[in-house]
Amino acid sequence: MKNVSPLYPEAYIPYGTWGGSWFPAWHTSALAEVDIARFAAEALPFVLNKKGVQISELDYLVSGSTVPWLYKFWASPYLSHSFGKRLPGFHLEQACATGLQVIVKAAAQVQAGSHNTVAVLAFDKTSNSPAGVFPNQNTYRRTEVLSDIWDNFGYDPGTGQHGFTQYNGQTSMIACAGRAAREYKLDLSEVLDVAFLRYQQYFEAKDTGILNKFLFPMNILDVRGQKLGVVDGDYGVRRYNSMDQFKAERELDTCVTAGGQTHASDGMMTMLVTTKERAAELSPNPEINIQLVGTAEYRTKAGFMPDAPVNAIKQILDRTGLTMDDMTAVYNHNPFAVNDVIFAKSMNYDWHNMNNTGCPLIYGHPQGPTLTRVTVEALERTVELGGGYALIFGCAAGDVGIAGVFKVSDSKGGKLS
Image (cartoon, rainbow, N blue to C red):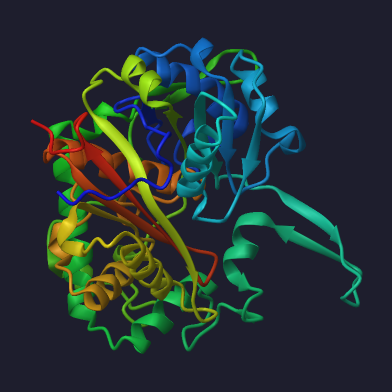
């Protein structure tokens, strides 16, 4: 394994001190009826306790979400108050890149010596998303009413266009995928092959219990403390038993079908970033070291979102001197199967060898915590394979790409025994 210096040498992720809820599709669970911020905050100590970590160990909170929530003004301090430990902290959002950004920013806090043990909390709820009225001096109406989820997904201010292509009524996100598919001259049959494999990978991981290591059933309570229900699965995931089912679906845009795109979901994820000494104390496997060795962001042409992560990956490989051959695990935040094919074609990488335990294409997309779950799955996979480098990447907001490389090693920087 190549020896690459970490981006933040003092920051470590204690193996196994992570987890969260399953990601039920929007309006398929009791999560649709609750304050997702308060729920996520109260779920954090529940998850950490499952891993043997008490909230008394924490001294800072970095949170992230993309959908407005009640009392968002108060941000991370309010969230930590909700779970019973009054911590300083800050809140960030960068569309679908949020789930990786919170990890990067937590590592920076530890590296700076500002804080010792930083909790990461990412969450979102697409169900019952809020609507807002905004003063707008630039329009003749003077005010704009925005339905946060669907209006943002249906209109890209970077292009000034609504999401209509030759197929009427599709969102700007679908238009991004179709536009990129045409640019790269993708073949629909290959895109369908990728999507079908992704379903097989997910159900194999679920059926073997791998996902139960970090996704936990959670009771959902109303304001009186009465049980509304339980979330114990990625509700809404379809099961395709044959390629014929894929081929029978209508093409929504070029190389985009219902089975080849993700769906809106709700959920939360949490993890820790701390010092080397504290990581060894908090982790159930202290001999495993995990560090961030590089990160990159890239903005591509407006409206070509699936193309952006490839350019971020190229930057990160150039900075670190690593190659795709050095990667033990490769995981993509892939709202469309098109994204995987563009990545594979651009990087000369076999798409069969990525997203081995599942991906957002299948289990859903609650935005804020999506890349956090992708990161957790990639790190678990890397440990399972004996360590090495894990590449995590994804797209966001119409034309943005983000990528991160993590190193999983023993205490001497080598492969796990």
